[in-house]
Length: 576
Image (cartoon, rainbow, N blue to C red; front, side):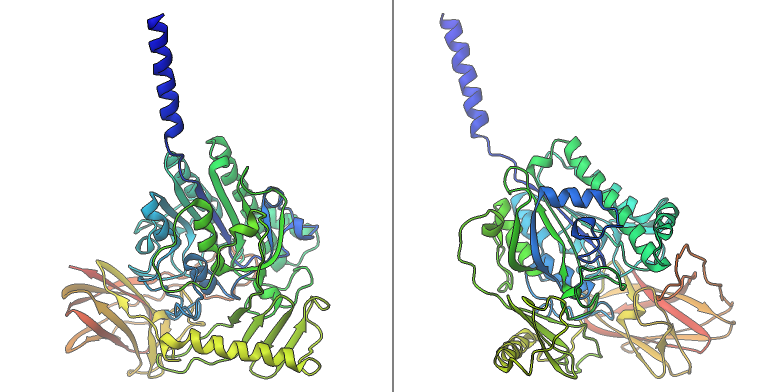
């Protein structure tokens, strides 16, 4: 009897200990599509597009019916990861260094780290090209993908994994999903944050041939057929990731969120909304948003209150029980009460947005184009005229009511004025690019430089672009910050029509001058583009060692002067 009683007490002690052990924190899987609009889903009425995995996810999720983002990529991504509006972050555009999220800002990955989360990012970063503005510099333990705004080749691409770039075999969306699934499986025994910012369906238009043929046969012109092929492939990969959660028994303890970064990048079905990517109208900013947490959030629930990208960080942190980090004031609020179906009074909110802002350093940030979205109206100033739309009665934004409803227009205009003044206060109202921090290995992209003396971009100055030099006094300049003095080997990625041209590098009082001894004038690399691309083509830029520079600590200006007939894509500085 005593032996049985001892065993019973021992069993109860084990049971009590098991019950007292803290449950593992919920995992977070955040999937972000690129340039995919609200209407790019069958569940949103697109009857000829097959998206079974995302349609199923919608049925299992709470859907934020009025989820708004910025009209272009980098601003959305920076706001989503920090809970702060991109204008406060000085993320003003998608290129020229103005897409860079400063290393001092606290991201969702950094906020989760004290709670024991491991974080991985698999896809398109587009918020900084050099440490500490890269994904790994911003709290992610693992990164697989690319840092720029678009990728030039989706088949057998060269992708980075934790600082090492190498050629890979396969289609890029499939590989990003594979990497995400590998991260999930490896870290299934501890809480993880898996961020999957796919680059589909961003151009260039490249997709598996069978899916492109499918949508061409359905009667779509090539551009739309290519987009839909990329989206169906993305959908299949979302399904694979969700099945991985199921197979590992993680679905019940994983909070899954799906959204996109802006409206559609081509004219196509978008639920009748006006505008697309880059637009200040509803179609450029209202995107799908599904949040699934089995047993915790009601499947199939619809939330009609407006929400925005800045709400993601505070919402996810509250749902998983992690406190907000110490940061400057957030623009977002937690949507947890709405997601849980709690009876709360929800105040009206105003959402402010701008189109992309560029310009040289120290030039004024233009006030317009800009927009304000209230619960009922959208006010837009496009630099030419003021517009006001009553979205309750005119969801397609066809009837400008600014003259008929001047009081509402004036109220929203004044609200925009006050918001704009506050948002640009930290910049004194001027464009300010962050200097590039020198590390062990730093790549100075031409798109981050200032071009003068006739130097110009081959294309638009986007990622993968290069500079051409019509005169012997053409220059490009980068602003750098060196944490400490050091010596760097400088290499240029270049082409040259003929030998004999010179490249001069100047940093402070140091000058390196190199005369090219050989031509390198490669043809464009043919890619599997399904329609002609609007970005620059691909070609091989040859590394050319220019010499070594001794860099002192602090702010620096590095300038190169290049002879005509030479093209430069980037400089690489390797610490010696």
